[in-house]
Amino acid sequence: MRVESIRTHLQPYRIHARRSTTVNHAFASAIAPADAFAIDRVRTAISLLGQDPDVDLACVYCGLPAETWDHLRGLVVKRNFSGYGHVLGNLVPSCKPCNSRKGSKDWRAFLESTPADRSTRARREALIAAYVAEYLPEPLTVATFEDRCPELMAEFSAIRMEVLALLARADDVAAAIRAAQVGLARRADASPTSSTPSSARPVVASAPPILSGKRRTAMSDNDEITKMDWVWLSADAIEQFKAWRIQGGATAASASSYATGARSFVHYCRGLDKDPSSAIEDFYKNLARNSGITPRARSDYRSHARAFVRFLSATSRQRGSVGT
Image (tube, rainbow, N blue to C red; front, side):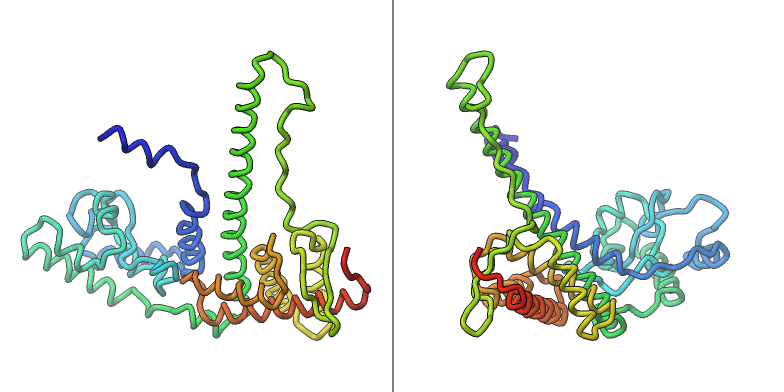
């Protein structure tokens, strides 16, 4: 290792950059189906793999003692649910080295790379193939979920975007905290006295809340909002929007989905000095840059954002609240 390699460690930690993939994978994995545990069925399945369910299991790839369970087919592909789940037919006993080396590789391709003779690999492949044929169900798709429960899927995706937005926000706040530390250190260097007057101490400006109790809007002649200071949006605006949807005839589930989408929109718009129409299109384009968001979900988010802006326009007219 060369001394210059420390460069990569002398950098601020970025929560969003380091953990956004983890979040995307977690959300994709969360909707994967899971089998109920039934010991007799599990024992039969293990026997089909050529193993004795009454003794310690062996790795299906190399034959060493098994230490964990490997998913033959990964749960996540390109940040989306792959269609396979935590089910018999997709879970096999594995040693930790094989589990780690296989990763998301195709199980047949990985098996071919193991250091065993051809006949042993062929026997192992035949056992796994028979197990898969008997127990692995047909894969599901995100589109299937969206057809069966579109409102829940839209809400689920909006929550994921909200989590990612909060991670990005945390990075901003962390940067402000680091900047305050630098300011404090500089003041300490400039003033070697043991105590620093409170008036001279640096003040860490707290990040403005995403939602607070003030509201600033500007209206056009046709009663459309032309500018919105999203930081000062009323704290109860989302709940009021939800109630407004229900009053308009929406179901409680639909109103909740719209409210979640609106909340994600507000998170994105924080600090923007744009008219809502431009903000909506920017929001939509930002969603498009996230490959884990399906086209249908993006369209739903845009619809939720447009409905929320209509609600803001309506309430602004009713209250006659223009300017500050």
